[in-house]
Amino acid sequence: MVVNSVHWFRKGLRLHDNPALQEALNGADTVRCVYILDPWFAGSANVGVNRWRFLLESLEDLDTSLRKLNSRLFVVRGQPTDVFPRLFKEWNITRLTFEYDSEPYGKERDAAIIKMVQEYSVETAVRNTHTLYSPDRIIEMNNHSPPLTFKRFQAIVNRLELPRKPLPTITQEQMARCQTQISENHDERYGVPSLKELGFKTQGDRSHVWKGGETEALERLNKHLDRKAWVANFERPRITAQSLFASPTGLSPYLRFGCLSCRVFYYSLRELFMKLWRRSSPPLSLFGQLLWREFFYTAGTNNPNFDRMEGNPICVQIPWDHNPEALAKWAEGQTGFPWIDAIMTQLKQEGWIHHLARHAVACFLTRGDLWISWESGMKVFEELLLDADWSVNAGSWMWLSCSAFFQQFFHCYCPVGFGRRTDPSGDYIRRYIPKLKDYPNRYIYEPWNAPESVQKAANCIVGVDYPKPMINHAESSRLNIERMKQVYQQLSVPIHHDVRFITALSLMEEIGNYSILSPTKRPF
Image 1 (tube, one colour):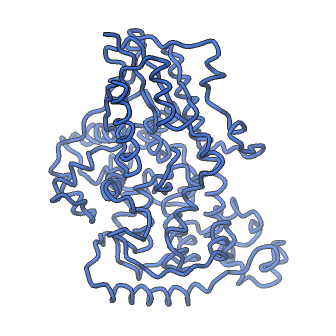
Image 2 (image 1 turned 90 degrees about the vertical axis):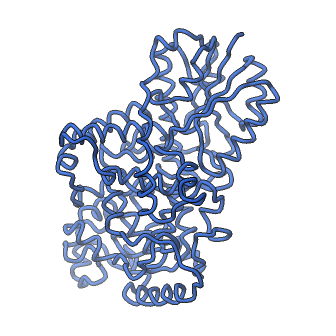
Image 3 (image 1 turned 180 degrees about the vertical axis):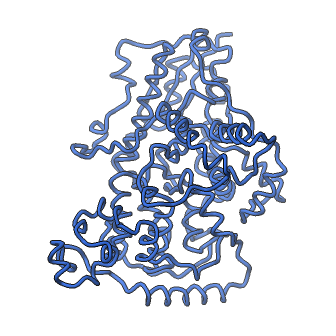
């Protein structure tokens, strides 16, 4: 029997550790690697140009790697339910493979696809590699409900066997056993589109900070592992001003798009630790950044309302204010607090901010100062963040706003003091808010307190060249703590939480935090 395979790339944009792709190649006569791009999303979805650029670069890199194996990537425009029936007939497909998606939208989409392909007598093979563990298995071990504290989650993971070891990358020999039929007009029919083709204006807008693709991901992983000191000493990296800038070892966008396998990351850390310490087994806390990712994936897998307040059984129903004007100032980096505005400016320009910066702006928007719903901030992150991720970031926003997982609402980030402790010289602010570059260190975090003579000398008058603070932090934070106290006093049931806040901060430092994507119809 002739076996004609299609491997459907969604996340998992890589050739290393890709069991579903390996299954497509197994015994196949022909194989085609497909990415389905819905052009509708480019014009209407809340996804910014930086993330689109990262995706397209990742697809270009994937196509380049496949070329070296005498194959190509087929980028097909449309929606899966429309595209596959046409491809099955045109290519006489008998097998479809893809990576398992544990998120509610993905499970619903894939169930519909599996049902549809049965009508065409096409077999399907689905493999899970986007997470270390099966969320369903963890839920089963927790009396069929997701663990809602990190401590409980860790206890279950401790009882599980180690994650499966990653598979090697696809080889020339494997590809040689099955053909990829490539037409002369392949680039015209199935090539990776440009940003311009998708309707984006990109002149002078290119960011060189984050380059998409598996090749870049593996290079960054090697640099990441070269930082042996923190692994050898089992110490978390010290947060400095330099930490706020994008690092050549940052990995979060690559894990989000699957350019880097989480299993490769896990076992690279594990093997390095064992080599340096000559111990048989590293502690779970070494993998904290990956385990928090797993924790939120598990918490959200069976909850389609995980990213919203309404209908979300784990979310505290807090009566947030509706203030579009204040939300816009926060999103545009016009709050009048240089620390907050620098963070939001970096986010808009580069598509990434350090996890502590994410904590600062999330707290400022929600329970710290503006008392605006975490859902609103989540949508801004959805548009701007390269590593926007539905489960992890919905969970992170609930956590940081004290809407779930964490009740220590009396801990607030000061929009002046927090940044000053991290970067006393204000270099970060000078980089992203050049209007303030000539302010002395003493006033750069609170320019409104600078004498008029200092403001004139810096060529930046507060209220004219740079906005006045939009709110009195001391007053608003005190008021909001009282509001949160009232909300929790009125609760009739206990809220799931994890009080080990400081531990959580340290464990998430290596790859950063994440953000979210819309729940209904998600492009990538």
